[in-house]
Image (tube, rainbow, N blue to C red; front, side, top):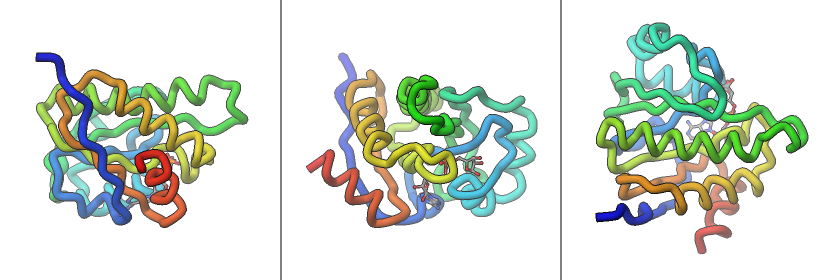
Length: 168
Ligand code: AR6
């Protein structure tokens, strides 16, 4: 049977507290941690996550790699690397869409059915929020996947409002 689109939810909160199959990390190409949601996920997962990430050899922008969640409530962490916004003519939109597609494929590879996403690239990487939100929602809605539930976990009200405006 062909997979149907996942059910979509928008929540305000801290993604490290999500009790779900997999949370997505907005990482950088080293996969060795950083600030923002990446730092929060590493702190909450514990040092085993960094030790595991050291074995992965990094991750190119637009792709994703999956690890266990270690001390997190989530079983898996899907690490994806969003594009740094450079004005919009450096393939940023396609790379951001690729993050969402690759993360859903990574979820499928480990059988994760419920996945939580942060607003990839919209923090330190400065991707304009409205455009990033359009890509997040449209890509998740059009990518074939066995994931049944996607939660967009927003860290601030401005982000939540953007997702709500798109999802109704
Ligand atoms: N839960 C949910 N969302 C969060 C959390 C949290 N605990 N913390 C921050 N956010 P950013 P990027 C939101 O900067 O733009 C790191 O240093 C945040 O408010 O974390 O993809 C990496 O190592 C924003 O809406 O990720 C890379 O070097 C969103 O998550 C670089 O930052 C993304 O912001 C990646 O930059």
